[in-house]
Amino acid sequence: MTQLRFALIGAGRIGQVHARTIAAHPAATLTLVCDPVSAAAEAVAATYGARACTDAADVFAAEDIDAVVIGSPTPLHVEHILAAVRAGKPALCEKPVAMQLADAEELQRQLADLADVPVMLGFNRRFDPSFARARALVEEGAIGALEQLTIISRDPAAPPKAYLAQSGGIFKDMTIHDFDTARFFLGDVAEVTATGQHLDPELADSGDFDGAVIVLRSASGAAATIINSRHCATGYDQRLEAFGPDGAILADNQRPTTLQVSTRQASDAKAPYLDFFLERYADAYRAELTSFIDALTQGTPVSPTVTDGVEALRIAEAAGESARTGATVRL
Image (tube, rainbow, N blue to C red):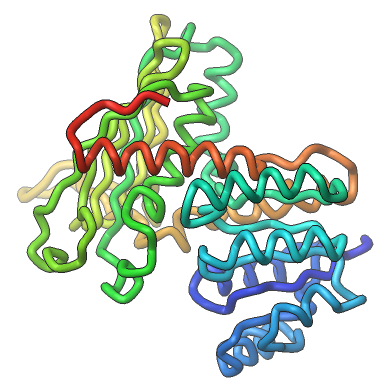
């Protein structure tokens, strides 16, 4: 099998996830790892037999690189996407597409004038087997016309405050995945109503919400409710329910095993949820990369696109406005 030679920009936590996924894929080879922190780039590169660099320009100039995975900090996403396209290198970029909606829209305008080089956005939850199957059943009409979608997404613990300070806030950093999932099921969103919460004393000085409840109304009248929290004592809480006139579809939490234990103290006790996104969405990252590779080798369209990234960011900014003002924001 011909293997695509990948460069990875960013050797942090998400970069390491992508490095592992690329290295394990039968149609991919991790050839180059780039990070401004040389020790980080060298450590990841050494693990997978790649070479390392500290300047992203070296990635785009490299003749032995077929495609790029962009896991750099969000403020660099637009710059790195444009550089990849100008170099003729297809790119898979992590979410969000940009920190500000205006920058994302400008990226759209510039890409329209450049060569048609595939760019895919890393909304990996579309590729989660359970969520993807639920969406397929909705599209098939298994429950009739979708009326209500409920998405629960709670992290086991908040990230470091240094990360929160540069993350763009809960709606752009965390809920952005859920906004894309909602669009994946509902289509275009017409209204956003959000309530932000300040309930975690550990995050009181973070300048950000530690929880949120958001209601989205689609152009069709269907509604999505998104429930987020930066902490969850039982683990990484990831659930989805789609409801229609003919039934409901539930994608429940995943656990290390299906074991249940009943004793005098408890009935049907189960193991905690999987610890975090690294475990919960491992299959989704693999399927996402496969979809990207298929687009490059078979000519299938990439999805999600930069446009999906722009629309998710538009909802995120509307949610932030709604949480601050208490008003419903129309899109």
